[in-house]
Image (cartoon, rainbow, N blue to C red; front, side, top):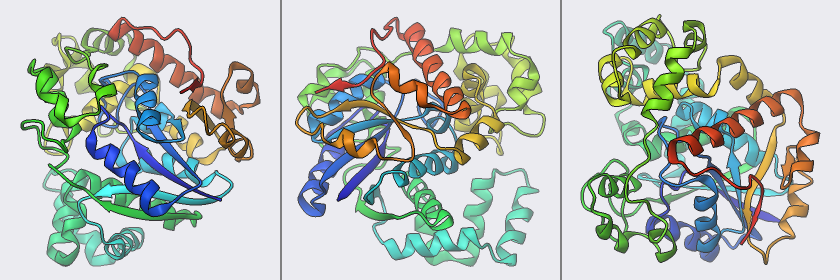
Length: 388
């Protein structure tokens, strides 16, 4: 039995995503397809445009057989943790596992070569990175510099967000010896970070920009009709709730979040008292070494109580497969999920089988739902599987 999985945020779902599931079904011919979907908050520390159940329904309507939530503990962290957590869950499925991801570069050989290099860094590579870090740049920028100097033929692999995530997927597979086959689909349309006008194959960023600028009508050509009718007229903003959480949390809590280092908790805590918006706070905190996304992840992790030890434990324990939605014609997939090393959750009774670490991670998911409800004034009436 072959299951093809996709790791996604769908923030929001658009025509490029629809082309991917169509490609998977046409070319890979799986028995089942699963989308592992971020919950109500994103990898860059933002608030999702739509709640996780609405986005899960969109994925089922587009052709997926099931949607499983990527726990918030993984979904809101660095590319390495995001990827490690997601691929770990995929590897727990008792079948032939294929991971299909989109990237600007579709050469599997280049991804594998680069992943192996990063897993076994040569001394000259390490030295160059250390020298760059001393100049105050971020680890990502230091690594980029080392690649361009020593391995210019690989520089395209580390030059875009989708390639970087794809590289982390491949690294995780190789490092852990997971029985997961990566399949790369070359990304079409505009780049991930292109915030210009929405095209027929847009970026999710351009769609969010259009919403932010009040140009909702321009989005219609870039998304399926069932997505367009659900889009909000403005983006959700969690500024007040999230800044309040910073004010009420001790500096040690901020310090223990996965991305925090070098006393950054002091700067964040002190500046939180003088800013009423997250943008203003982040603009003053960020530096060459600490990017906007990293600061946002630290702040969100503080609000949700995600600390370094929880992430470590979660990556080393069997967790759960929280099914957000399933195609009503493919419910036999539930029998397959029940044989996973991770507990399948479709109803409240299933929660009783979770270990201590899994319960802690699950509670963070529930808190994320409550925080999202507070931010959007849209509290979920149910937190269990939808039959679509």
